[in-house]
Amino acid sequence: MPTESHPEPSPDATTTGAPDTGTSAPLTLRAAHIHIAEVFVAFVALIALLYFARAFFIPLLLGVLGSYTLHPLVDVLERFRIPRSVGAALVLSLLIVLVGWFGLAMRDEAIKFAEVLPSMARELRYELNLQRTGTPSTLQNMQEAARELQGAAGDAGTQPPIAGPANTKGKGNTAVAPAKATRSPPQANEVKEPTWLSDYVLSQTALLVGVVAQTPIVLLLIYFLLAAGSNFRRKLIGLVGPSLTHQKETIRILEEIHTQVQRYMLSTLGSNVAIGLATWGVFTLLGVENAGVWGLAAGIAHFVPYLGPGAIAIACGIAAFVQTPSISHALLIAGTSLGISSFIGLATMGWIQSRFARVDTSVLFIALLFFGWLWGIWGLLLGAPIVAIAKVIFDRVDSLNSIGRLFGR
Image (tube, rainbow, N blue to C red; front, side, top):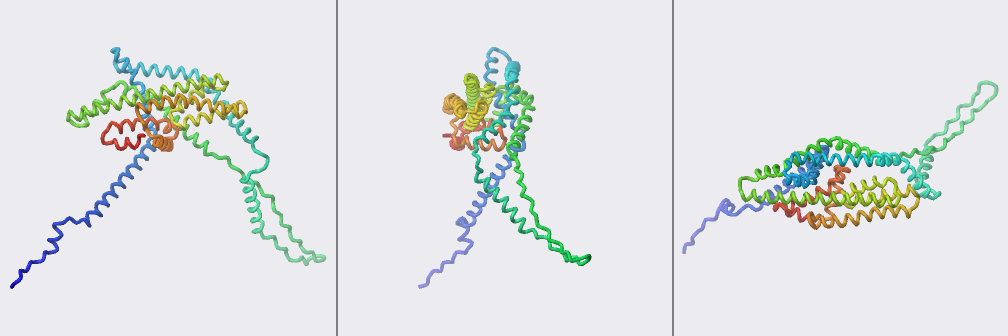
């Protein structure tokens, strides 16, 4: 019986029907690696841009945050049928007058505080030297031993002079006595004073002066943002396309972001002013010198969560110790400063966090370290508002909700 012969399928026929998984998998993995590399390069480029263009971004952020803070006052004037351009000019004029009056009121005390800073530093150094014992420390002993070993090694490597031949000329043979090797006493190595603190202060002062010099530009930016009102947000709506649904959703998101950021800035400013006034009053009652300067410093430092109040408490304790060399009095002043910041700050910040931006503590701390490294003192002051505003935006935009959950508690 003849058997039917079936032709064997060709290799091309077997491979064309099924996908080539062996080739597509490496291509997909390579594309993923390329995407990760592109994201990394873009992130590094963004950090470099923020660092080298900090003289532009810092005044820009100050202007935006200032406009959010003063926006409610302009809205109140607009309800009384005052044009926004006029209302913005009135609010900024009032702000300049108040800041100028406060500066004149604090001028003498600030000058006095600046004059006593060098003497305070010398007094603190003297008091710390008195606290030391007369015996050298382990590090000093090791340094002295290293200097002695270095001198011994130098002596061993020095060849003594060889005696010359006997002088046969003249009356008698007189041998030249070898010169005795003498070693100069080891000179103490000069101890150079550390300069990292002074270098850091000088660099931050230069950055501060550079930003302060741009105050007119910041004020103009605040004025234009206040005078524009919601017109700028309406222009942004045109970027989402002609769809009415998308435009309504964009309007809702922008209004929510605007309201939340505005309330956050007002609440933060109010709590910091309360901390400054409370510190001023309590320090005046306790007899601390330059209480007004310490109140101003406490109010500004509270813009930096956790780090600011701690630094002010330590500085107040050191100043009190220099004023009256008493550890108990220094601890009292430091504890009072920390208590005021904790009582007012934790109460108000807890309410702010529950109402507006529940930012995770670890995320906020990492952000403060990052912006402090990036922009110095200005980064510490602007880091917390930037993170809070970013959290509000992430929570309102659906495509960014995953990042908002990462930032939240």
